[in-house]
Image 1 (cartoon, one colour):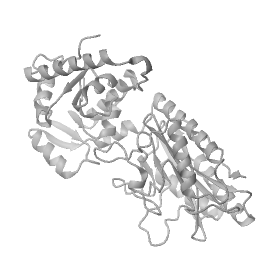
Image 2 (cartoon, rainbow, N blue to C red; image 1 turned 120 degrees about the vertical axis):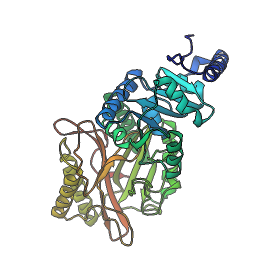
Image 3 (cartoon, rainbow, N blue to C red; image 1 turned 45 degrees about the horizontal axis):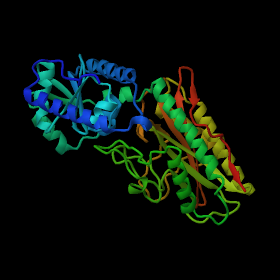
Image 4 (tube, helix red, strand yellow; image 1 turned 120 degrees about the horizontal axis):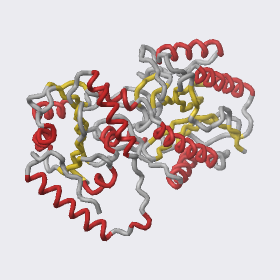
Length: 433
C-alpha cells in the first residue's frame, strides 16, 4: 500500500500529524480485513476533479477572491469526489485541502485530492489553512446562497481576519457547465429512466391506483440503480424523500422558491385516484443514478383518448417540441420563456398555469445535474445567457377542467449550434392496454 497522503507543508502541527497517522493505520487494519472481491466503488475520475478545481480557481481570480471555503454537501462532493462530513478549502493558487470530520477512510478511498486531513473540531481549520498556505486568506468566499446566517456568523468569527464574500456565483458558474464525463452519467440515467417508463406501462391499467403504480415503479427503479434520495440545493442536506417536501399541487425548493417537486417517490402520477379508461394520465419520473438526476414527464392513457382530450394533448406535445427546438447557446432564459408563451398562445394552450389560489410562479424549467433543481432558472426576468454544456429540464403544462394536469418534460443539453436531447422518451402519448 502507498504511504498516507500527508500534508506537503512542514509547518503542519504535531497534533494533526498524530491524528493522520492514527486514522491511517486504522484504515490499514480495516482494509486487511475486508473482502474486496465484490467491491464496486463508484469514483469520480481524478482528472475530472482537477478540471473542476482549475475552473473554479479561474473564476475566483476573476472575482478577486483568495480562496473558497465549501461546506455544502453536494459542493463538497463536486470538488472532492466524496460526500463525507467534510469541508473543502480551495485557494485561488495552489492545491486544495479536504478536511474530514468523518468518515476519513471512505474519503481517502473516494477522493483523488492530494491533501486529505482529519479534524476533531471545526475550530482547528484556520490553523490548518495557515500551515498549508503560509498566510491566512484575505478575501474568502462562502456559499451564501445556502448558508444560514447563524452558520455564516460562526465562520465569520472563525476567520476573523478575512473579508467574507459570496462565493456561490463562482461555484454555480463551474457547476452549470457539464463536462463530457458528467453528460455520460446523465445519459446512463436517461437509459434507466426509459426502462422505468417501459416497466410502468405494464401496470397502468383500469382500476389501478396511483399509489399501486408508483410503489411498483419505486421497487423496480431501486432494482436497476435508482439512488432514491433526490438532492436539492440546501444546506448540509445529502438528500430527501420527495414526500418530505411535497404539496398536493407542487412543493417549493426552499432556496430557489420554485414549484419543483411533486408528490410521490421516483414516479408521480396524476390524477391521484384510481385510473380510468379514456382519461389522460401524467407520469412524471425523477431518476437518480451515480449522483446525477433525470426529470422527465409524459402523458399516458388506458386505451385511446377521446377526441377532445386527444386534441388538447397533441397541442401540448407540439408546444413542448417547439420550445425545445428554441434551445441554443446565446439565448436568455427570459427570451425562451417569452417564446414559450407566444407559442402557447398560438397553439391555444394555457402554458404552465400556476392554478387558482396558489403562490406558485410560472417557470419553463431549470438546470439539472447533481441536484434536481440547479441554475439557470428558465423564467421571466432571468437575462443570463445559456452556454454550451448547460443541461436543462424543460416542461410544458396545462390543466383541463381544473381536474387533469397534463405535463411533458424533457432534459436537453445546450450545444454549440443548438441542443441535444438527453431524454430517450419519444414525444408522444403512451397508450396502455
